[in-house]
Length: 221
Image (cartoon, rainbow, N blue to C red; front, side, top):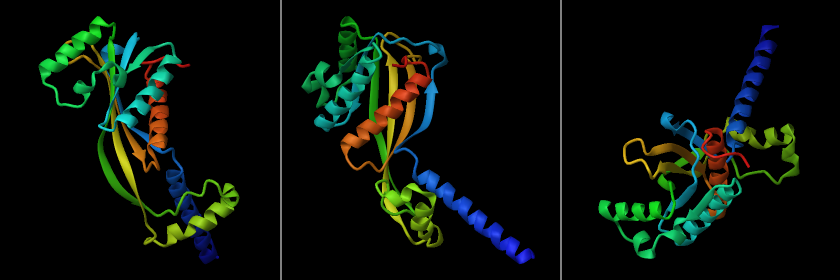
Protein backbone atom coordinates (compact mmCIF):
# COMPACT_ATOMS: atom_id res chain seq x y z
CA UNK A 1 0.00 0.00 0.00
CA UNK A 2 2.85 2.41 0.74
CA UNK A 3 4.41 2.12 -2.72
CA UNK A 4 1.36 3.44 -4.67
CA UNK A 5 1.04 6.26 -2.13
CA UNK A 6 4.70 7.16 -2.60
CA UNK A 7 4.23 7.16 -6.37
CA UNK A 8 1.23 9.47 -6.03
CA UNK A 9 3.17 11.85 -3.79
CA UNK A 10 6.07 11.83 -6.26
CA UNK A 11 3.74 12.69 -9.13
CA UNK A 12 2.10 15.46 -7.10
CA UNK A 13 5.50 16.92 -6.24
CA UNK A 14 6.52 16.84 -9.91
CA UNK A 15 3.28 18.55 -10.93
CA UNK A 16 3.72 21.22 -8.25
CA UNK A 17 7.31 21.81 -9.39
CA UNK A 18 6.20 22.06 -13.00
CA UNK A 19 3.41 24.50 -12.14
CA UNK A 20 5.90 26.71 -10.29
CA UNK A 21 8.20 26.67 -13.33
CA UNK A 22 5.29 27.56 -15.62
CA UNK A 23 4.23 30.39 -13.32
CA UNK A 24 7.72 31.87 -13.50
CA UNK A 25 7.81 31.52 -17.28
CA UNK A 26 4.40 33.15 -17.69
CA UNK A 27 5.21 36.27 -15.64
CA UNK A 28 5.06 39.67 -17.30
CA UNK A 29 8.05 40.59 -19.41
CA UNK A 30 9.09 43.39 -17.02
CA UNK A 31 9.78 42.73 -13.34
CA UNK A 32 10.32 45.31 -10.62
CA UNK A 33 13.50 44.27 -8.82
CA UNK A 34 13.92 47.12 -6.36
CA UNK A 35 12.05 50.30 -5.44
CA UNK A 36 13.44 52.95 -3.10
CA UNK A 37 11.70 56.19 -2.15
CA UNK A 38 13.28 59.02 -0.18
CA UNK A 39 11.31 59.29 3.10
CA UNK A 40 11.58 63.09 2.84
CA UNK A 41 9.17 62.89 -0.10
CA UNK A 42 6.21 61.07 1.39
CA UNK A 43 3.95 63.26 -0.71
CA UNK A 44 5.68 64.38 -3.88
CA UNK A 45 3.70 66.39 -6.40
CA UNK A 46 5.80 67.15 -9.48
CA UNK A 47 4.53 70.11 -11.50
CA UNK A 48 6.67 69.89 -14.62
CA UNK A 49 8.78 66.84 -15.48
CA UNK A 50 11.53 66.46 -18.02
CA UNK A 51 11.64 62.85 -19.24
CA UNK A 52 15.05 61.55 -20.33
CA UNK A 53 15.62 58.21 -22.04
CA UNK A 54 19.40 57.86 -21.85
CA UNK A 55 20.21 55.98 -25.05
CA UNK A 56 22.27 56.95 -28.13
CA UNK A 57 19.47 55.53 -30.30
CA UNK A 58 17.60 58.74 -31.10
CA UNK A 59 14.47 57.07 -32.49
CA UNK A 60 14.17 54.74 -29.48
CA UNK A 61 14.67 57.70 -27.13
CA UNK A 62 11.95 59.72 -28.84
CA UNK A 63 9.51 56.78 -28.78
CA UNK A 64 10.19 56.00 -25.10
CA UNK A 65 9.96 59.61 -23.97
CA UNK A 66 6.82 60.32 -25.99
CA UNK A 67 4.96 57.29 -24.65
CA UNK A 68 5.93 58.11 -21.06
CA UNK A 69 4.97 61.80 -21.25
CA UNK A 70 1.63 60.73 -22.75
CA UNK A 71 0.96 58.64 -19.63
CA UNK A 72 2.03 61.51 -17.35
CA UNK A 73 -0.06 64.07 -19.24
CA UNK A 74 -3.08 61.78 -18.88
CA UNK A 75 -2.62 62.19 -15.11
CA UNK A 76 -2.59 65.99 -15.43
CA UNK A 77 1.20 66.21 -15.03
CA UNK A 78 3.01 68.58 -17.35
CA UNK A 79 5.83 66.55 -18.91
CA UNK A 80 8.08 67.06 -21.93
CA UNK A 81 10.68 65.04 -23.82
CA UNK A 82 14.40 65.69 -23.55
CA UNK A 83 14.52 65.01 -27.30
CA UNK A 84 12.57 68.26 -27.71
CA UNK A 85 13.99 70.31 -24.82
CA UNK A 86 17.72 69.56 -25.03
CA UNK A 87 19.79 70.84 -27.91
CA UNK A 88 21.26 68.10 -30.09
CA UNK A 89 24.81 69.16 -29.18
CA UNK A 90 24.04 68.64 -25.50
CA UNK A 91 22.61 65.17 -26.10
CA UNK A 92 25.30 63.90 -28.45
CA UNK A 93 28.43 64.85 -26.52
CA UNK A 94 29.83 64.39 -23.03
CA UNK A 95 29.17 67.29 -20.67
CA UNK A 96 31.14 68.67 -17.73
CA UNK A 97 29.58 69.27 -14.33
CA UNK A 98 29.43 72.96 -15.12
CA UNK A 99 27.67 72.31 -18.45
CA UNK A 100 25.03 70.25 -16.66
CA UNK A 101 24.56 72.93 -13.99
CA UNK A 102 23.96 75.51 -16.73
CA UNK A 103 21.35 73.23 -18.30
CA UNK A 104 19.63 72.71 -14.93
CA UNK A 105 19.44 76.47 -14.44
CA UNK A 106 17.75 76.74 -17.84
CA UNK A 107 15.25 74.05 -16.86
CA UNK A 108 14.44 75.81 -13.58
CA UNK A 109 13.91 79.11 -15.41
CA UNK A 110 11.43 77.31 -17.68
CA UNK A 111 9.43 75.93 -14.77
CA UNK A 112 10.81 72.40 -14.53
CA UNK A 113 11.02 71.03 -10.99
CA UNK A 114 11.63 67.33 -11.72
CA UNK A 115 13.71 65.12 -14.00
CA UNK A 116 12.99 61.44 -14.70
CA UNK A 117 15.89 59.48 -16.19
CA UNK A 118 15.81 55.90 -17.49
CA UNK A 119 18.84 53.98 -18.73
CA UNK A 120 19.95 50.42 -19.43
CA UNK A 121 22.48 49.48 -16.74
CA UNK A 122 23.40 46.10 -18.20
CA UNK A 123 22.35 43.06 -20.21
CA UNK A 124 22.45 39.51 -18.83
CA UNK A 125 22.35 36.22 -20.73
CA UNK A 126 20.09 33.59 -19.16
CA UNK A 127 18.58 30.23 -19.98
CA UNK A 128 15.35 28.42 -19.21
CA UNK A 129 13.86 24.98 -19.83
CA UNK A 130 11.09 26.28 -22.07
CA UNK A 131 10.22 26.21 -25.74
CA UNK A 132 8.85 29.11 -27.76
CA UNK A 133 5.91 31.02 -26.35
CA UNK A 134 2.61 29.14 -26.82
CA UNK A 135 0.28 32.11 -26.25
CA UNK A 136 -1.64 31.68 -29.51
CA UNK A 137 -2.14 27.91 -29.26
CA UNK A 138 -5.77 27.11 -28.37
CA UNK A 139 -4.88 23.76 -26.76
CA UNK A 140 -2.57 25.48 -24.30
CA UNK A 141 -5.41 27.47 -22.78
CA UNK A 142 -6.14 24.33 -20.81
CA UNK A 143 -3.77 22.93 -18.19
CA UNK A 144 -3.63 19.51 -19.88
CA UNK A 145 -2.32 20.90 -23.16
CA UNK A 146 0.13 23.12 -21.34
CA UNK A 147 1.37 20.25 -19.20
CA UNK A 148 1.80 17.93 -22.19
CA UNK A 149 3.88 20.49 -24.05
CA UNK A 150 6.13 21.48 -21.17
CA UNK A 151 6.64 18.19 -19.35
CA UNK A 152 9.72 17.60 -21.50
CA UNK A 153 11.10 20.82 -20.10
CA UNK A 154 10.83 19.35 -16.61
CA UNK A 155 12.13 15.85 -17.30
CA UNK A 156 14.81 16.80 -19.85
CA UNK A 157 17.19 19.18 -18.11
CA UNK A 158 19.20 19.66 -21.33
CA UNK A 159 16.27 21.38 -23.02
CA UNK A 160 17.53 24.96 -22.88
CA UNK A 161 16.19 28.21 -24.31
CA UNK A 162 18.53 31.20 -24.05
CA UNK A 163 17.16 34.67 -23.47
CA UNK A 164 18.39 38.15 -22.55
CA UNK A 165 17.48 40.27 -19.54
CA UNK A 166 17.90 44.04 -19.77
CA UNK A 167 18.56 45.74 -16.41
CA UNK A 168 16.86 49.13 -16.48
CA UNK A 169 17.22 51.81 -13.82
CA UNK A 170 14.81 54.74 -13.54
CA UNK A 171 15.50 57.69 -11.23
CA UNK A 172 13.48 60.77 -10.31
CA UNK A 173 15.23 63.93 -9.10
CA UNK A 174 13.93 67.13 -7.54
CA UNK A 175 15.76 69.90 -9.40
CA UNK A 176 15.16 72.40 -6.62
CA UNK A 177 17.11 70.40 -4.03
CA UNK A 178 20.86 70.99 -4.27
CA UNK A 179 21.88 68.22 -1.88
CA UNK A 180 22.06 64.46 -1.51
CA UNK A 181 18.31 64.62 -0.83
CA UNK A 182 17.50 65.58 -4.41
CA UNK A 183 16.90 61.91 -5.32
CA UNK A 184 13.16 61.33 -4.87
CA UNK A 185 12.86 57.74 -6.07
CA UNK A 186 14.84 55.04 -7.84
CA UNK A 187 13.65 51.74 -9.27
CA UNK A 188 15.41 48.80 -10.90
CA UNK A 189 13.63 46.65 -13.46
CA UNK A 190 14.43 43.49 -15.41
CA UNK A 191 13.08 43.55 -18.95
CA UNK A 192 12.96 39.94 -20.08
CA UNK A 193 13.80 39.06 -23.68
CA UNK A 194 11.84 41.72 -25.60
CA UNK A 195 11.31 40.88 -29.27
CA UNK A 196 11.54 44.51 -30.41
CA UNK A 197 12.01 48.04 -29.08
CA UNK A 198 8.29 48.86 -29.24
CA UNK A 199 7.43 45.89 -27.02
CA UNK A 200 10.27 46.75 -24.64
CA UNK A 201 9.14 50.37 -24.27
CA UNK A 202 5.50 49.45 -23.73
CA UNK A 203 6.31 46.77 -21.15
CA UNK A 204 8.68 48.94 -19.12
CA UNK A 205 6.43 52.02 -19.09
CA UNK A 206 3.38 50.05 -17.94
CA UNK A 207 5.33 48.59 -15.01
CA UNK A 208 6.96 51.95 -14.25
CA UNK A 209 3.64 53.82 -14.15
CA UNK A 210 2.06 51.24 -11.83
CA UNK A 211 5.06 51.47 -9.52
CA UNK A 212 5.00 55.27 -9.40
CA UNK A 213 1.27 55.19 -8.62
CA UNK A 214 1.84 52.71 -5.81
CA UNK A 215 4.64 54.87 -4.38
CA UNK A 216 2.28 57.90 -4.51
CA UNK A 217 4.66 59.83 -6.74
CA UNK A 218 2.04 60.28 -9.45
CA UNK A 219 -1.77 60.07 -9.18
CA UNK A 220 -3.83 57.34 -10.79
CA UNK A 221 -5.57 58.19 -14.04
